[in-house]
Length: 133
Image (cartoon, rainbow, N blue to C red; front, top):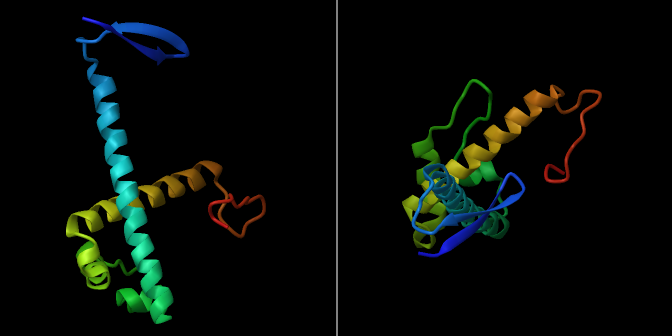
């Protein structure tokens, strides 16, 4: 059998090709799933953006959202059905669910990042990153 070279902790390590490290495999699966979800999210966003520009409507009107408040949560099923109505045959329900998973993951990461910084938008010391602007 051959050897496989990997970089671990900044060091080049040779591992036999037949030996599998379960933690490396699980990281690859997670990373692969995240990339797949991100690609689906980009596809759905592109279709929604084109629809909103073409129809000249607000996003909440396009998705059929009546009110946006912190005490009212839009159900995932309603959102999925609204997106499917707009995208039609261009996306599958699976793509939409992957996109929603990606959007949830990104918003959770941003929320955790804000909690670490402990500075809310609009307060002194808040620095907007380039992706938010």
